[in-house]
Structures are given as C-alpha cells and as structure tokens.
Length: 203
Image (tube, rainbow, N blue to C red; front, side, top):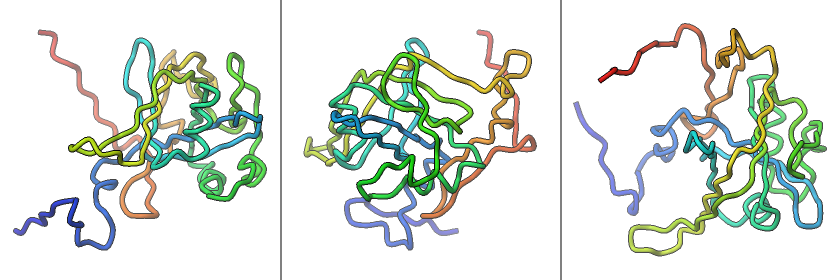
C-alpha cells in the first residue's frame, strides 16, 4: 500500500489540494459585516471555527484583506450565520467577488442585530453577534507574511430558532448544518445515523 508524500511548498501533485479536504468537514463562516460607509457585506468562509468557551470566541481566516476582514478592522463587528442545507444556493451566491450587496444578490433578508450594527441573515436559524477581539496577519515559519488575516470575535449575543432546542439541548441534526469538505465543490451534512456518544473519563 503506497503513501502519497509531498512538501506543500513544492506542490501537492494532485488534481486538487487535499489540505482543505483532510481538515474537514468544516463549518462555514457565513459572515455579515458593514463597511465604514454603511454598505452591507455577506461572505462565506471555509476556514472558520469556535476557539473558546468563556468568553465564547469564534474566528475565520481570509486569504487577504478583502471586504470582510477590512470591514471588521474598520467597525470591530461581525455576525456569524448558520448555513443550513436549505440555504446552500443563496450561500453560494454570496461567494461572489463582485462589489455588490450580497443580501440583494442572494435574495436574503438583512435583519438588524440587537447589540451590534452588523446585519444578520434573517433566514438563518442560528446567528451570533460578535465583537472583534483580535486580527492577526498570518505568517509562514520564517515569519514572512502569508497575506491572510485571522479575525477572532467574542460572541456577545446568540439567536437560536426555538425548534432547534430539544429539552434544552441544541439538536445539531435538526439544524442541518452544511459543512465544507472534499474537493472544490463538495459539501456535507450531519445525519442521525452518524452520531456516536462517548462520555469523558472522570479521573
């Protein structure tokens, strides 16, 4: 049985870079922001995750100081919006590089947040309102700038569709989160049959 081995700096030699597929599936960072002049922006990020319980911290990485990262630097705010299976197509529409209002392009409802100014996606069944805590320009091992920027934010308000709470527990399967993984077009879901339960050791 062979092993495909490569140095990333020299190329992977495959049809598609496997890095994203190996570290996956990943939740989608559907990030809503406002520009300094008040223009709305909504963009999906596949490099997104949660990093801490208390305070609750989430973060996403942008490959450059594009609209979202710049808006976060200018305003200090963003929303995260859950992409459920039924929002696959509108989410994909917001991946455009054009300078447009992605809410309008994707036919989505911009909904006012409660404690920040950045807009939420009205159709999303869960949203986080976040205030930026850090923005870190990522480097390689030699300290050279990669061009990418990691934005981390503290979740200051949470909105959850009541139907997703069962006996006070968030039902991940019912939420049907869309996850990024595989090749350039691959997304995944979560099903009851894939669930495993395991208690942590007590000692």
